[in-house]
Amino acid sequence: MSSPVRKFPLLVSTALLSAVAGPGLAGDLSVSVDLPRLNTAAYHRPYVAIWIEQPDQTAVRTLAVWYQVAAGRGGEGEGKDWLKDMRTWWRKGGRALTLPADGVSGATRAPGTQTVRIAAARLSNLPAGQYNVVVEAAREQGGRELVRVPFRWGGNAGRTSATGSTELGTVSVAVTR
Amino acid sequence: MKRSLALLALTAALAAPFAAQAHRAWMLPSATTLSGTDAWISIDAGASNQVFVADHAPLGMDNLVITAPDGSTVAPANMMRGQYRSTFDLHLTQPGTYKIASVSSGMSASYALNGENKRWRGAATDFPGAIPAGATDVRATSNANRMETFVTLGQPSETVFVPTGRGLELLPITHPTDLVVGEEATFKLLKDGQPAADMEITVARSGARYRDNPDDITVKTASDGTFSILWKDAGMYWLNASQRTDATDSRPASQIQYTGIMEVLP
Image 1 (cartoon, rainbow over the protein chains, first blue to last red):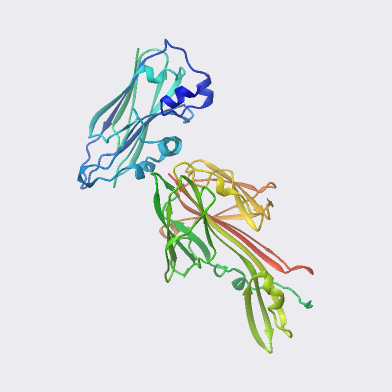
Image 2 (image 1 turned 45 degrees about the vertical axis):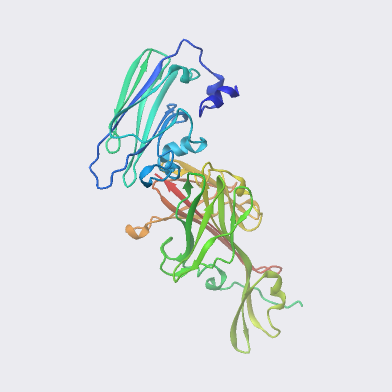
C-alpha cells in the first residue's frame, strides 16, 4: 500500500486508498486554465494550484503547482515562501506536500490558455466517482480566486467547465477514454 | 509570621500586571501561516482600548516564552520597546507550530502605613515578608496571567499545546492556525488543568477602527470547558477570559486571565 503513495505526491485518504478502482476505468484527465491578461502596472504571473477534491471539498490529490520553483534570472527569488498565498490549497493539502515534486511542480505560466494533461496511469488508483477539479490562482500585488469544476471519473468521456471573474478565466476539465 | 490580615480585593488597576483592566493586552504577529523552509515574523505587543491598535502602552516582555515545535525555547530577536508597543522578531526554522506566550504570576498588594498608601508587587513566595509590621488595610491579590499566540511554518503540529495545569489555559481542539471564515472552531478552556465551565470568553476582531461598531462577541464555555466560534469575518482575533475570586479566610483574592490571539483567513 505504501509504494503507490510514495510514487505520487498524493493526498489520498486511507479510505480512498483501500477502495482502489481496478484498471479499465482508465482515462486521461485534461485541465485547461484560462489565465486572463491583466493590465496592471506591476504584473506578475499568478501562482496556480490545481487539485482534485471530493464533493465535500476534501483534497484528494494535487495535480499541479505553478510557482517560482528556483531562484530565477532577473533577481526573481525562490517562491516557496509564497505558496501559502494559495490559501485554500495550502490548507487543504499543499502544506502536507514536499515541494518541488516531480510531475507536480512547474514554472509559472503566461496569460492565455494553459493545459495540464494527466495521463490515465497517474490516476489509476483514483476510485470512480464524482469529484471537483479546483484551480486556485494568487497573484503578487493582485487577488486570489478559486474555481471549482465538477467532473465524473471512471465513466464516460465528458467535458465540464466553470469561469472565474478576476484572476481566472474559464477552467475546463475533459475526461477522455 | 502570621498576621491577622483581612485579605481583600485589590483595585483592578493594580491587579493586572499587563495593563490597567480597562485596556486590553495583545500580541500581534505579522503572519501566522507561513510556507518555505524558514521564515521571519515580527510581533508587536501592547495594551490599548482597541485590540491591536498601538495607541496606549507597550507590553513588558520580561515573561516572554517562545516554544518551538520540538519543545525547545527560542529567543526573540531585535527586541525593542517603543512608546506604544514592544516589538520583536522571530526566526522560524522548524516546520510546525510555535507558541509565543507571555506568562506571569505573582502577588500584588496595597496597604496603609503611618497614614500613607503603599503598593507592593512581587513573587508569591516573597509576599509573607513583604508587608511591614503595623500595616493596615492590607489587600492582596494573587495573579496568574497567560497570553499566547501561535504561528505555523508548513504543516501545523500540536506539540506546544501541553497545558501546565496552572491558571487559565486554552486547549485547542481546532488548530489555532487553521481557522477560516465559514467554519466553526472549538477550544477548551482549562482552569488549573480542569475544564473551566460556564465562563465568558470575550472575542474581539481586528480593524475596529474602520467600522462603527466594535462587534465584540461573548461566548460561554460549556460544562466540559469547551466553546465554539463560527468565524463570520477574516481578521486577527483576540480571545479573553478572566476570573476574579474573592479572598477567603485561608487564601487571598485571585485574578486569573487568559488571552489568545488567532488569525482567521478568508
